[in-house]
Length: 205
Image (cartoon, rainbow, N blue to C red; front, side, top):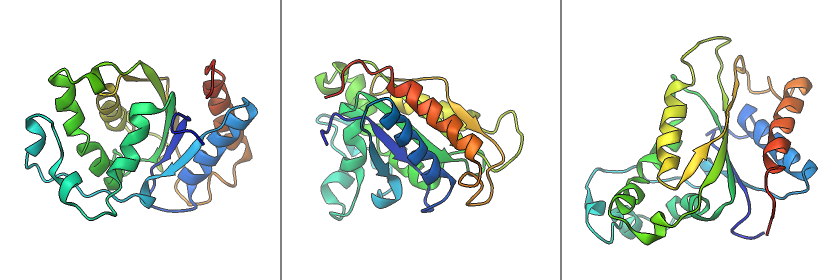
């Protein structure tokens, strides 16, 4: 599979739960649209949290953790699609009105790309505009502000890479780990969301 393939980020620290089920539904949507998509499980690529050393403040804006962390640090794997993928999906549970800690660590480490963009670095400046589709899963059955913090953070983070957010799919009441896998109607809804998104791709390498 090409590095330029669409990517689905599955952002739950728990394997086999609602988030993974939703990610597989999106991949089914891709298949129905005649496309391929790579599933990228965030938990398989643990990221060392930013330590606010600000080593990335000056050119070449390298992260000290990229240079000094253990080889197991997953940042390079996680950031590559932000630079190359033609379309992206982010599927995540909401913990305490925000994204999981593992995703926040990943997000904080994109600071160096923000500073690259500010300095006019051509690697970031020349990125074409792309779209990210967001599926957020909340345990609460209601809550008007449940997803606001997550969506704001995603919009700001992805904006660094010239990625804009499509209308998100926001799902309430998914508390138990099998709530989605036992709800075929909701799975169909997610598959349809994915199929519509993948159908927007005119050319797939």
